[in-house]
Picture 1 (cartoon, rainbow, N blue to C red):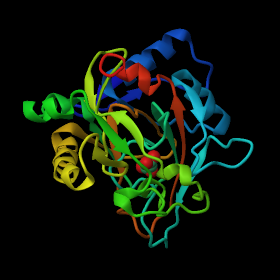
Picture 2 (cartoon, helix red, strand yellow):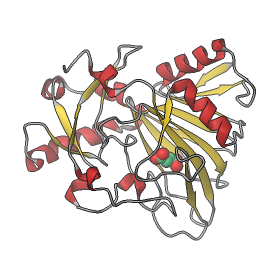
Picture 3 (cartoon, rainbow, N blue to C red):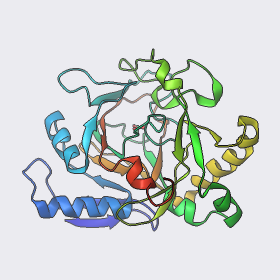
Amino acid sequence: MKVSPITGTIGAVISGIDLRSPYSSHLISDLRSALDQYLVVAIPDQHLDSEQQLQLCEVFGAPIVNPYAPGTMPHPELTTIIKEADDQAGVFGGGWHTDLSLLEEPPSGSLLCAIEVPPYGGDTLFSNQQAAWASLPQPLKDLLSDRKIIQVGKPYGVKWAPPLEEQSMRGATRRNDPDADRERLHPAVLTHPVTGREGLYLNPTYALRLEGLSEADSRPILDTLFQHATLPEFCCRLRWSPGMIAIWDNFSTQHYAVNDYFGFRREMRRVSFSGHSIRDYSLQRLA
Ligand code: SIN
């Protein structure tokens, strides 16, 4: 197994492995370590079918069903994301976000398989939230250190709109669950349970306000943090090829699906998993 970093901050491409064959405990441990280290790993030329994708997912955590974009039976955990060549709408994930941080138990990671990709465009950006936290000015660190963030599925107070993350996805999106508009409080800073690295945990799709502050008072602070959290220095840009898979740490990154491939079809299959719980990431900070 060869691990080649994508940038100096985040991401690695892994080659020399075949995930369609049974994998050894050694390989499993190497994959987990690579994810802990690089936060997003891309593995080209795997062409996994649904069962193989779920089997690989289990290496990192139990597959979960996305309550707003469930897949079809027999694999409701798998969500297919399709944008047709003539689709004028936005894209699933076309805004900076961490997956489903509006849930009480957000997923710790996700695994995306490229089924069909445009000849160019359709990349995914990832940003390292540990690097973002490490370089945050101390007064902002002090403000966030022991604070929770209110996360909710109504982006910026627009009630009943689907979460941005789920907009413009053909077919699968279902949104009639008032539970999405319940406010969930999650720590603004999480500590990775294996590496001990601290990272920011807030994103412009779901974070509404800081605990103890109004939405209006939170707004300029959040805007500053969102801008900081996605500086180019913390990011990598993943160019997809058919059969490639990517796995990311959802508690230590944000991602953004780039909508720049009008005229071409793109089809992906994704699953999120719950490995470590958000409590595992919070233990060292908030009781
Ligand atoms: C997502 O999971 O947000 C979608 C990413 C992508 O399609 O590139």
